[in-house]
Image (cartoon, rainbow, N blue to C red; front, side, top):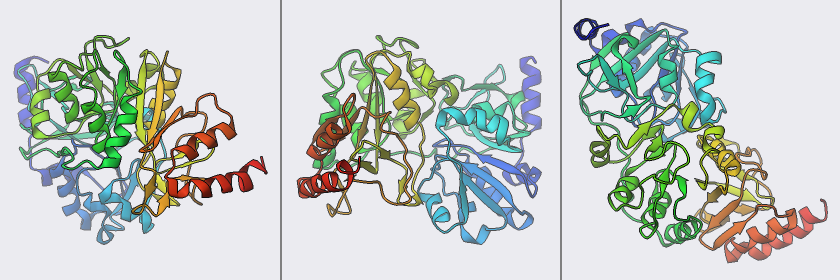
Length: 436
């Protein structure tokens, strides 16, 4: 299609958000965008239509919007099905008003194009260029694959969306309806205050990173602090699920240049972005950033091709065998696996790769140890003891790779809070060692 026809196609399909969502009917399955790229106007319009709908399944993962369809008053109109829990969606799960589908991020492309095919997909994009292409900007993830399979694709067109490259580019003819809405993008702010515990954990993690390593990181106080502590490193590469503001600062300092990466050399490769407005402006039209589908970025076989790959992720609990729970608090679904399992397995298969779990040694203001003899009843294992290499708390690094069960327990007790070490030793000898 030539440029003139592309423009005619685009302009003929512009409508209000309320008009665009009229195509949704009872019993449909709707995927509500993802991450910082969630299209606010489309979600709000669908919720305004709630009285006309019954049993519309709404699927979302990393939700930075308000997820109003999870509120009790919309039960019956919407059935929420999450692949990753966030603040707006947790209560619906805990009150039994929502469903959760366990799936690693790398498999969501396949899941939503085979088993859970959507009727309607919400996305947010840039305005089209002269050739009729738009960019999905800060959110490519699994939604890019779904663009090719959803019966109807509705896009919020936002001038604030940065233009990014890679799999982010799609033609306007891949979209059925357009809603103009230049509203501020969801931001993930830089943590204003970093605790002594977070700084200590970050220092331990930074000590495991060498010049020329490729790292996977996320957002939050610990990942941002780790990045900031690499000022004296050289030739760091980035291959990560979610790229954030801290990466920009290290690129400007020359620490991150992606020159030693085994694949995608010279590029920050990620599947979504989340940060400040300054960061979004920085990545706009920036060819050093390449956003790819989650089926590529998070594929353990892709990750394993990166020599010296370092994967960093957080946890809620770790037991004395090295089993990690990162997404549940007892039987309550707190978050989800995201890309944690993907990157741990990929990094473990990479030449000289490392997988790291980090967490404070305690929770509940120091009254509860996060290192425990057994995971809490009802909690699922996120990372098996076969996947984890290093566990880090503010008290040090436990190297579990190639260790026996008893050696693992000793390593983990060493990095537990001192107030709980004696109790953990007793529990290990009385309840684990004597039974094993």
